[in-house]
Image (cartoon, rainbow, N blue to C red; front, side):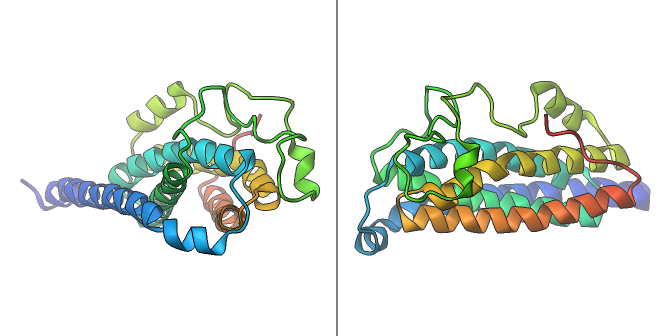
Length: 229
């Protein structure tokens, strides 16, 4: 086996180990979410409302696809900048899924809604605030959340290699982040609990920075973002 072959194949097990590590973080995050029960009960005077529950349910699903895409890039890419970004997204969002699912368990709420997505983003959702995010309100649940990759796009990402993989990952993840912004900003203003408003605001800030970075990375590769619609 040549040195180049050893280097190329040797990178895959290392990437797989990182993916397994992120899965471990997801499990730890779920446990941490459950252990947050006492601090959350002591700090919160408000009970979770439809926005808190719906946001945690839908953003868990939204995050799960981002974790999946990041895992594909982490294992398949040979670009260190892309792999570093993928690792950051995968570990951060895995941990956040754990927190959100932990809160749902605490509130005796289902892990996912069976009535579609984003129905909690409505004018009568009984939220906390009355800010600009109300402009993103929906009239009812929708079948798919903005920014989500299709099954065909996920298949294409899994099959891509080299620079094509890097570019497609950046395009899909950037659109994914952009699609989640209305949900993040709405929950940051409208959630009843301080914990959910704080988490949503943190997510929005982090993903805004990552979106700027991904736009720059795409430009450096001679590529353009995908349309959101």
